[in-house]
Length: 111
Length: 113
Image 1 (cartoon, each protein chain N blue to C red):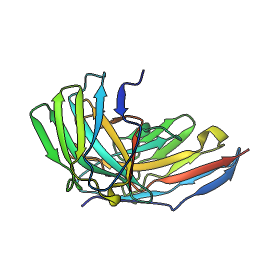
Image 2: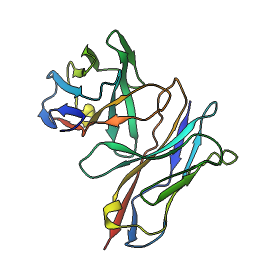
Image 3: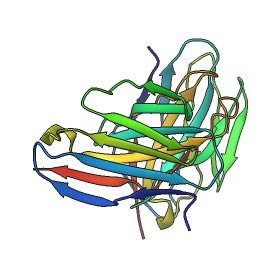
């Protein structure tokens, strides 16, 4: 079945540092790729998505590019803020099927 | 008010007790889901429903049952709770399969002693 591998957390960074959270996946067909974010005490919410190869999803300063050849969708942000502290989930999605969520990567940003 | 509301938000119970977690939504979505979150395991799908008459098992449905009382309401029951069902439970909705976007409630934390 489909699966997702995310870098182990927790990731601890200082404010204004560069962030990369790696995500690779195995999936049948040609999935859309999503990053969801879970802030403390809240449910998950969509952060960004990409629907085809070489597409770049972006939101709130975060970016991720759909790399079909390497089956990857790494999340990046140039300058993190304390408010970015959260758990980040990578998730491929095939039409007509259900999401497969990665294990999540916890990010802590220190002032 | 939240578009997807879960009750209770926190519950502590004992082994063998029956527990119901409720979810209601004001988004008008047809599709509703119940997920379980455990540390290091991400979210795993328990049950999902594409409309009132359509209920489907997810990857970890054993020990759980659901009821779709209306388009807006989807309840998860643990008939006889056991300690390894201690987890954070999320209800989610979606419009159709096309966009793939899920809308989550704030979660129900269940502890089974």
